[in-house]
Each structure stands twice: as C-alpha cells, then as structure tokens.
Length: 116
Figure 1 (cartoon, rainbow, N blue to C red):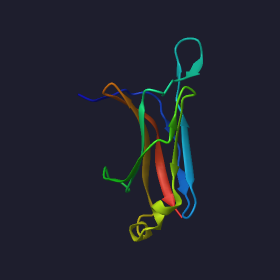
Figure 2 (cartoon, rainbow, N blue to C red):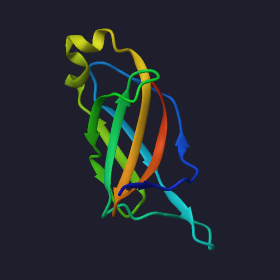
Figure 3 (cartoon, rainbow, N blue to C red):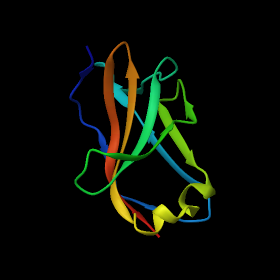
C-alpha cells in the first residue's frame, strides 16, 4: 500500500516557454535536530507531472533527469514537448514533483504552470 507523508513542501508558480528546454529543480531538506540538511535522493524515483486546471488527469509526466545526494530533483522538458497541436489549447494548469521510495511518496513541490 502506498502512503504519503505530510510535510511542508515547496510551492511555486512556473512559466513554461515553447521552443526551448525548460528546467525546473526542487531542493528537499530536512531538519533532523541539527539544522536543515539535504535529503539524499539517490534511491528515490522522482517524477514531474503537469495537470490541467482543477483536474487529477496527468497531461505530461517525466522522470526527473537528476536527483542525488544534494537533495535536488531536476527535470528538463525538451523543446519538442510543447510543439504538438494539443498544446495550443493547453495553456495552464497545476504541476507537481514527487519522490517515491519503499511505497512512500513525498511531495517535493507543486504550484501552477502557464505555457507561453
């Protein structure tokens, strides 16, 4: 059974641009009693998703391109992703980045996206 741990996560709105590689990164840190330290994401599966406004339907999903000991999960969205005709009408929605390990999913960041 999958679970979700509730912690404070990063929230930010992003502007995605057509015709270029868009890069989005989130840093996960935890305070274990001695100050905030990066969480080692080496053994996690990190995923970036785009959803339409008010919907749980994922319209784009990609595994993170980088995640490691520095706590940073990064995704690179290639320029050709938004070149297909379906993206003419998909101009905004919600994004989410998660990290999963041992049936536990952590929300690393989320917010709204707009495509221009």
